[in-house]
Length: 197
Image 1 (cartoon, rainbow, N blue to C red):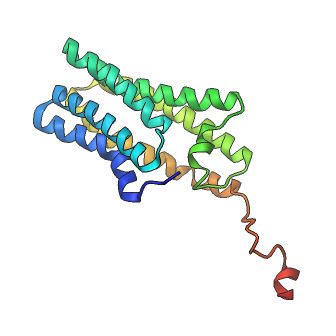
Image 2: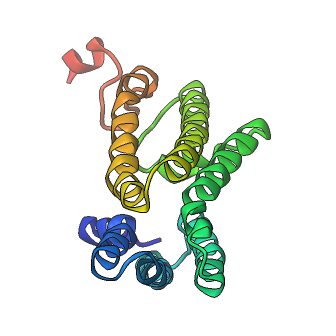
């Protein structure tokens, strides 16, 4: 399986968000919704071209965007697109937490190329991210119901992204504590091996 370049990965991860914000600034929420729908499909195609597979999380996001974005445009009701983060976050939480309850860590399958954690580390990291996504869903509901569309868009683009990066950074101590030792065949296993060489 091919891995996308860092630049392409950045486009896939942040492209729809940047496109949404730019379109909102130029044409309002309905225009931004239409652009987001196109961008969601485009990043799926880019991801498939790069990896020859469709990743689960972007697929969930794209399906929700197309359904709620379509309802937003069809009914001319911005409530649907404002609920999109809530639905996406709850879907992510359900996939992570239900999978963990069934003994399958989706987070491990997504990140095992980057991290080599023990099973307790994967379990705790999965549960933490699951409850983080639930908290983000609640936060989105509070913001869109309590503030103007301008405020919601800014929080969605900058606030949600910032909170996600911050939460990810706060997991570094857990990752370090539960990372398995390097067991590469070339690495000496003890001091006697190191000295005998």
